[in-house]
Image 1 (cartoon, rainbow, N blue to C red):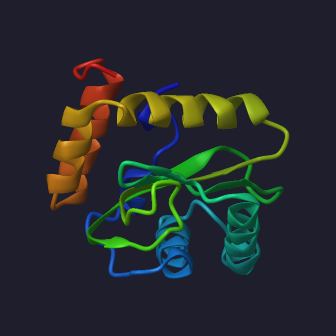
Image 2: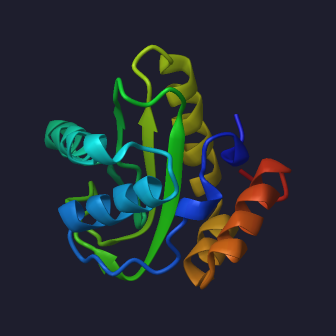
Image 3: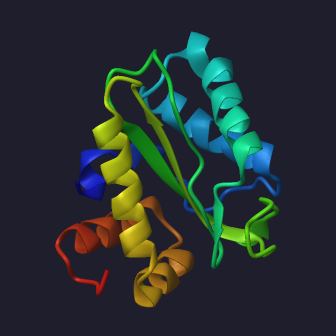
Amino acid sequence: MNFRDFICKDAIRPQVEAVDKESVIREMAAALLKAGQIAEDQFESIVQAILKREELGSTGIGRGVAVPHTKHPTVDKLCGTVAVSEEGVEFDSLDGEKVHLLFLLVSPPDRPGDHLRALENISRQLRDDSFCRFLKQSKAADDIWQLLEEADNNQFGG
């Protein structure tokens, strides 16, 4: 599975303003809402589902990266977005560090394979230091989209 299969280009947030976990999740979910990926009347339910997933254990996986995600019955296909925080977000990460790169995913409960493949793709690419460095330096959604396409085309080591 490639980034272009699930990341919504119109929802990419190159400079999030949020500085805490709930706020950044809300900001990213709002970007998906604005891009037409989630329904307005389901926004709060989706945010709460993501926060509930975070209670099970932080999706701040270390090295400045978090992958908040949930399965939700109101989406008919996997959708996601990317956000970059220059300041860093407190995310209760496994290594205690602030998060600078965030990938948020919402998928239908009846498509667990898509959900897992997306998480695997994100994880694989984020092991590449060059990819992470370029992503952190991106100042525009188009730059981030181009990086995701380069990753999809195996132009990084991940």
